[in-house]
Length: 299
Ligand code: PEP
Ligand code: MN
Image 1 (cartoon, rainbow, N blue to C red):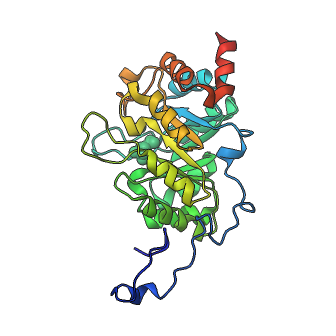
Image 2: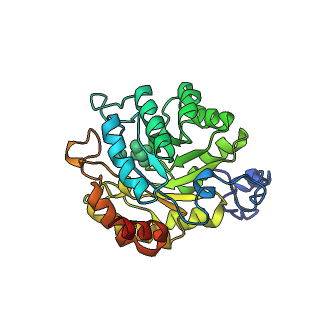
Image 3: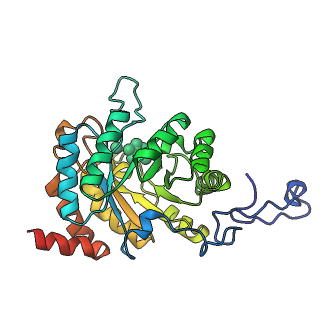
């Protein structure tokens, strides 16, 4: 890997010094990179919130219009402004529910418009980038696709805002290089997402890497979102993980919410029901003060 994140000094006696003499270009994603962060257009996930840190919420998968409307109604009454919902699902088993595809995106588009919310959904295939970008406000590049370079380049070329998830076995350096692929094609609207990495701990699906959040914030000017649902894989840890992520500098949090998680077609164990979502927001506290205030008014 190149020496650009961070710079590593090589002694003249070090055989690697041969390659180190060719200075790599500074990266656009880095604080000291070529792109001036102050002049780069801000990501809509950040600009839409007047300084508040966004909460991105919604079901793992769009399953039906009724399901998504129930979630969106609940969330929008609590001032949540970004609705997530997977339509193209990257499932471990090819026999598991793969998502509703384009029909799922149409539902997401209709419901998000109806409730005045921004929408975010995953694009799996470079050939779908254009059609997904036409229907959602933010394209999600999933953990399994962080190393899909044709997809990264295509999202870069299309210029649409993107959320790039960290591969579950990727280093922070690799995440920043993946983001650089998107920026290098002319798209500066990238937010990073820490969603947990695979460790030896069997009681959680992944391990939320809080240090990666701090590190990415230190090295890059890109916003960093923490997806606590896919990190934990269980709903009882989401509030403390969200608090930890925000304390480490995360610019926002993503959480999965379903009207009836027991019947969910994907990630049933980790999605919050509507009541649990309210408890989650209350427990995360002042970081989402606008949302909390609204919840008090609704009750
Ligand atoms: C998702 O957010 O729907 C998802 C599949 O997450 P990840 O790519 O982080 O596993
Ligand atoms: Mn999920």
